[in-house]
Length: 86
Image (cartoon, rainbow, N blue to C red):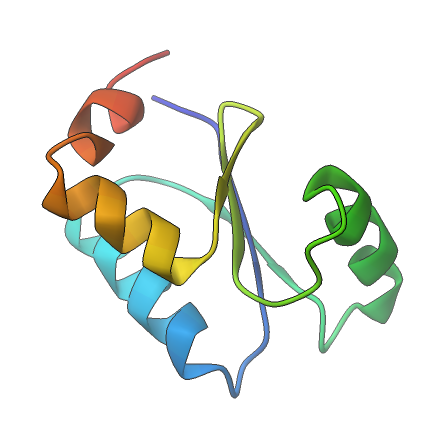
């Protein structure tokens, strides 16, 4: 099972879309809500190399990007391979 971190905000429609895809894939993930835990924003920005929008998604410590990046991996048929790596 891969290690997945996703930084989100509750009111973000892109976050909801990314979460829905991960849930549909039936993978476990660590959701870090930066609106409820603002001290996690700076570490997110550092991990994402300056990107400050949400969601920011990491699979096995690799920065995937945001919702559009996750959806692109799915459309290209590459997401399942990432999710099946340990």
